[in-house]
Image (cartoon, rainbow, N blue to C red; front, side, top):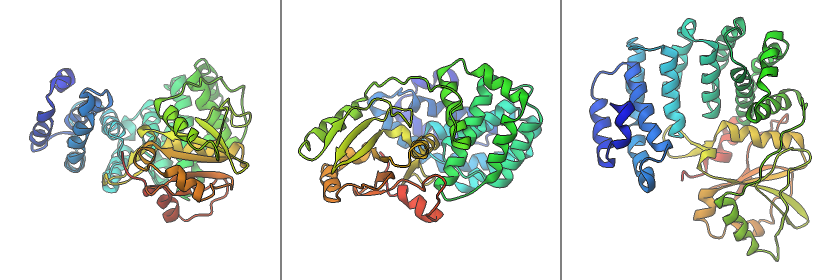
Length: 389
């Protein structure tokens, strides 16, 4: 019923249905189907202008969903379907809801995956790594070691796009670790083993026929090796409504701030949203809508998602003279004088990457590549001051 009719469920029935469903004893398959289908209504905007209300109703049920998931796994009440597919659906629920699982939920999910690796294909592992990376999760050495050992033993059933996706996921996970001031050299060892494997390389060659695969492959290669394997595909430069709005706002400060062309940077190889000059210093501004962020497990704060962390770190890695600012839409929308404060701060002429906290003050985005200088606590505090949209 949920799979076929969920788009017809009235807004005022979502909470009732979720409450009734999670009062029953559910197996893992049932939990996966219920949660991921409800999350899809949010992702697809089924409720239009009331999508935010619907999302908040579902967010309120996440503690109960997490407890039911842990119970089903502890009781080995998996239900039908492949266990790894069901676990992927649980993770997909959190991705679509833009929220990290709690630490204890994450622990039991990881334990269930490693305990059932014989049922997980390399396609499953590649997908799980991609999901965890984009949720900016700490995966732990033991989990990474066990899953990658399984992955490396059998590359035969892997598809070309899955090979590229896994390589890109390794880069995201490594960048997230660096963001938090954590070193996990095993990830780099896995990368080396894969790129030195002829069977895996053949898959990468086959995968180069799409722009998305090309970009993911280039990002992974530059992150781990600092090299460009081939010419970077051209990017379109279509401005979003947010970028246009922020650009219009900056023109109000034309006596101090000069907007510049945003053609692709000759070193970073990518187009940055906006570029301006202030006090004889060039700033590259990224305008971040909601999909750049993930809510923390309690739902009260946010952090950047794994893809955003990697993209920002790659730009600085390519050109360590850049000054990159990431402006969350929620800060731009809620703080009218954010650029007045920027001028009062006299900008931030040092190279590196920065974001704006909930008070509109520039703070370090994260530890710079290859030069970790912050503790894990300080690095996390650089972004957890942001407020959710």
